Image (cartoon, rainbow, N blue to C red; front, side, top):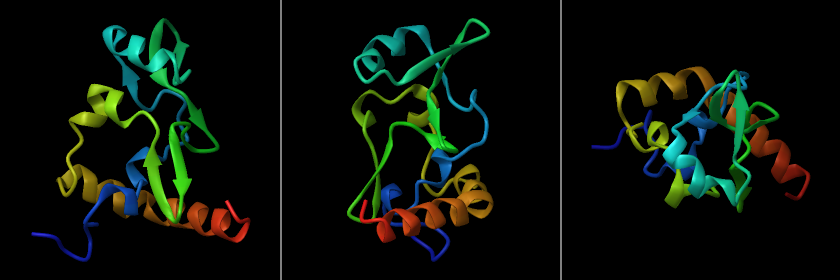
Length: 112
């Protein structure tokens, strides 16, 4: 059952894709091949991570007011295992939804 605290679709939110850390989402070696074409990964201290840009995953794009994952079909297991509406999801929304909405609003005003 959906609540006001939980979006009907992850594209309405994107909060879980925001972080100030360059090592936010670790990527397993076997997952990196599918992500290589999108240049989605960076190596830090011998480990692979999704590339971050301006405080969010670089693969998170803003289109028509929604957040869209550009590598959704090939997203890493850390992203696949993150369940919408889970306690972790609701905590990410509590902590980061204002960041996601703020950037979304700025992008809309800039016509992007």
